[in-house]
Amino acid sequence: MKKIDVTLAMVVNGDKILLGHKKKSFGKGFFNGFGGKLEAGESIEQAMVRELREESGLEALRYEKAAFLEFDVVFKGERALLVCHVYLVTEFNGEPIETDEMRPEWFDLGSIPYDKMFPDDKYWLPLVLDGKKVDGFFHFDEDLNVLDYKIEVVKEVI
Image 1 (cartoon, rainbow, N blue to C red):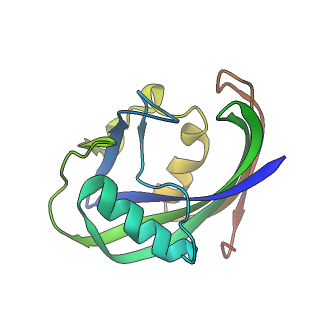
Image 2 (cartoon, one colour; image 1 turned 90 degrees about the horizontal axis):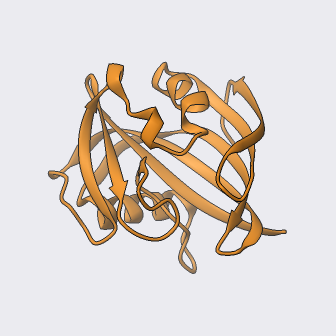
Image 3 (cartoon, rainbow, N blue to C red; image 1 turned 180 degrees about the vertical axis):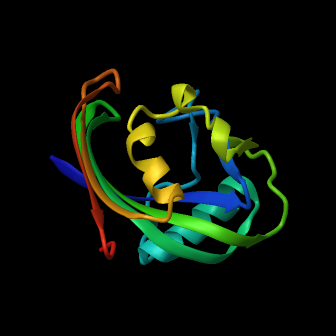
């Protein structure tokens, strides 16, 4: 099984969260945070900052690693292990802009559209938004249904 490191930036401003409506590729049609694969020579943190800028126009100023999630999923036609490094971004420069990949939209923290997001988000995102650090594993079928999962609240995210 191929292992792919990916990043995910969850942008929070007060009582709002910024999600992007994915316009193409993996996850098309879902709301999600901003992120993607690493480019050659990039650290995970550098990739998160770049992906956030490319997909939303925002420059991350203050952020912390909030979750380490592994997804056993069918990705581009073959089973893969996506290793997702989730950052909570709480300070940024700029205004969100629509890009080729994402259409950003602010949501109240009390009305996050979990029914229009990846099905795993409802399990771990509330914990992260509550200030907890999370390690998790999710096993998906070909239709992105969660078959099995494990979540653990931890002191530090690797």
